[in-house]
Length: 113
Image (cartoon, rainbow, N blue to C red; front, top):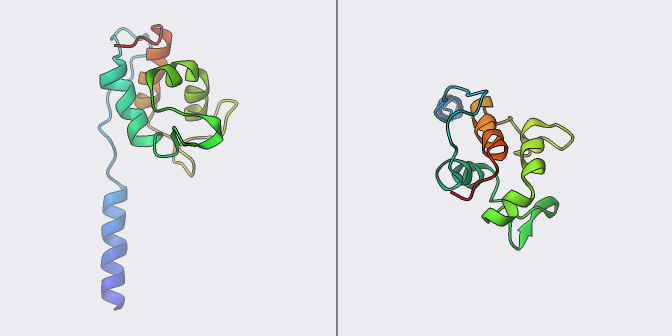
């Protein structure tokens, strides 16, 4: 039993160490960010389970472009814990490159592309 428990803990540690692909941070936002290809997948992976229509935790429904664009400052603020509770709840914070991607999308005018 002890061996099985140790194996499960070790396996859990290995899995928890895997992270999403880290991309270089573009501080100048020179690459156009696509809502459909870049932003929405981030929110689907990390936010939508708690922030969707009918289950809008904290009052934020992030299941559509219009809702996300309207709440963009709260989204980025919560990713950075800048005036908002750090999200995803329970942490850890998303990688800087992921946050920067959302930030660039906002700075580029929150395009519905």
